[in-house]
Image (cartoon, rainbow, N blue to C red; front, side):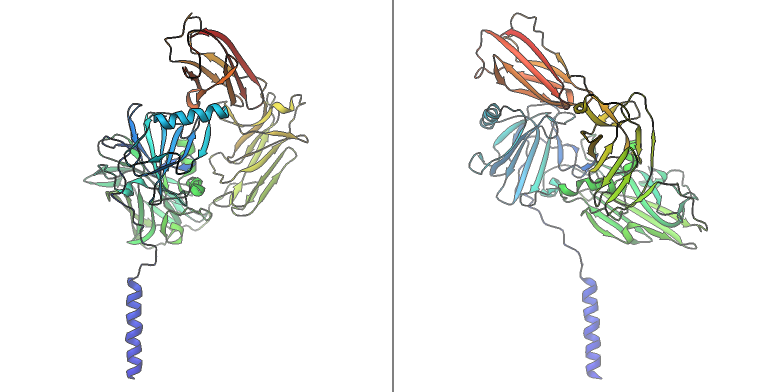
Amino acid sequence: MKYFKTNIITILSFIFLASSIKFYAQPKKYPKNYFRSPVDFTITLSGNFAELRNNHFHSGIDIRTFTKGKKIYSIADGFVSRIKVSAGGYGKAIYIDHPNGYTSVYAHLDRFNKEINEFVKVYQYNKKTFEFDIDLNKDRFPLKKGDVIALSGNTGSSSGPHLHFEIRDTKSEHPINPLLFGFKIKDTTPPKIFNLYVYPMDSLSSVNGKNTRKRFPVIYYNNAFHLKGDPKVLLSGNIGFGLQANDYLDNTWGKCGIYSMKVLVNDSLIADYSFNEFSFDESRYINSHMDYSLNMIENKRIHKCFKEPNNKLTVYNYFSNQGVYHFKVGTKYKIDFIAGDNKNNMSKLRVYAQAKEQIKPFKQKEYSQLLSATDENYFKTDNLELKFPENSFYSDIEFRYSHKPDTILLSDIHSVHLSNTPVHKYYTIAIKPNKTISDEDKLFIAALEKDGKFSNIGGIYINGWVKSKTRVFGNFAIVADTIPPSIKSKTNFNLKNLSLRERISFTIKDPLSGIKSYKGMIDGKWVLFEFDAKNNHLFYTFDKKRLIPNRKHELQLEVHDKLGNQSKFKTSFFW
């Protein structure tokens, strides 16, 4: 009997101890005082980590500089491990490896410091290219904390002067939330909540009697967020939620992304996630995390609080039943949504709901074929073939297809499902022309937009079909591009002397297949033309080291599009 009591006490002690253990990874600790600021002025942000962007999470913070030319500093000792220059994307960017296992990234730069800038220019002239991406050893450009590495700018896909700044884990290359490292950024402002979205998850579920997503506008009064108008919320069956919320920091008007989200039903946690770090390989899962349809149709970016079956994001701390809650008749419900920022400022929305019985399933729309989220899928007609690799979708797709003839385009217009449904992986699309083809090398598949415009998704003519790959649904047809790019000078070459000019500039465009390459020659020698893709701006800055001054020069510019069409511009000038 004594042995039995002793074991009961032991078992109860173990149960108590086990209940107090947290069976999830403890938050990683990041050095708070190791790094200095990358700028020498008070940091305010126009964008923060893991903001919802088209097809990706924002991988850093955007520091407002207001103008170009602000000094950018190395945040710690280290060395330049990588330099990348591109017409879009990050523009001019520097990567610095630090001895504590982190890499800092500085993007959209206007120019590098004198030593790095000269190295870059020599490399560009040797390779005869503006764009490049190069890794460097630790001895090439060693740095001390506080060394000036560049001046801020607006290069690449930047929409205004700012510094895009990242901290990555050097080994895994995962971007990590820079706000976890103790940078002094004032933030006493909690997030704002704008809309609640409620989703019936199957044919036996409903929101206020309907089997469609329902929006509930949110307003703020009496120091709290509430549903506007205090509407009835009647829920039946399996329900998911989504929240439109932004964070705002002190001393800036820019809206930023939230850091964390929690959802509780009757005080029981059903969803919990936070944005500390992610992998670039998983960034496209954002199209499952947010409501892709609302983003495409209304340009609204919604944090869904439930998880689709094939969403493999790692930012999620906890889900009960993937965040989907079953509402039972006869029970009253209290639903709490808590959106937080990195400084523990919180905003809360409380919603009261009742469960409603749904007796009959809702009628569902007809579809052509059910596509598996995880398996390979094939779809074929006489004039269209589609091949989807494994894990192309986040949930099974009730695939819809139709087509209609067209007298102008070189094929039928093929409506491949719905453009507001996300596709995770590239799939193969092949379309058969319905007209006689003469210039096979000028054909491509175009994604047609509602406004009559279209984008080139590429294509190659093989055995009577034009084939390409894409990661979107929508309307597709074959188009031919026989029109060369346009070159328009922004410099007045009628001037007798350009010696007082800093640069010569052009606007280059190709509305069909797009610009592929360009080459500028002065006096028969390659010269460095820089390309700002977002503005179609191509320019050459006069270089006294490489161009003999006080003489007449001959300029030749060639621009090629992606289908092999080319344009040339020739002139002479005095400089």
